[in-house]
Image (cartoon, rainbow, N blue to C red):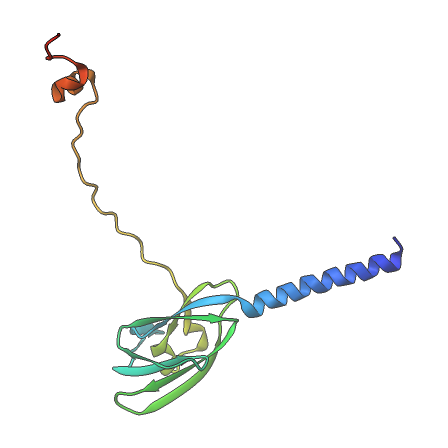
Length: 164
């Protein structure tokens, strides 16, 4: 193999690797939880309006109330969110945000976006609440001994039956 051929093959291989990394970056799927629960940022409590409509990346808007979460599946790192306030003041906010590549599940805080909080506080990593340990049921088991088995079913051992 000549050095020219080796160089060409190396360039093709590097091109495929670069293309793979790029496609992974733009196609990475994320699970977003759009959250309307109140948050406290820098000592200031931000609350969501009573009724809003939220749309991510131009998808159909979903109506939400206070203290609700909805699940949205998206692909890629850059997204836009449109929030339309239906109760109280009529206000429509459209913002752009970026999700880190290796964040699979993220919580997007609507009160933080509407309250003009810094963009770093809009998105947090979703961590599932710890599973509560339920008390184990206490079951009483009989001893697995031959005497216990003979007392439980005399037919199984043949004891107690008349011989022919």
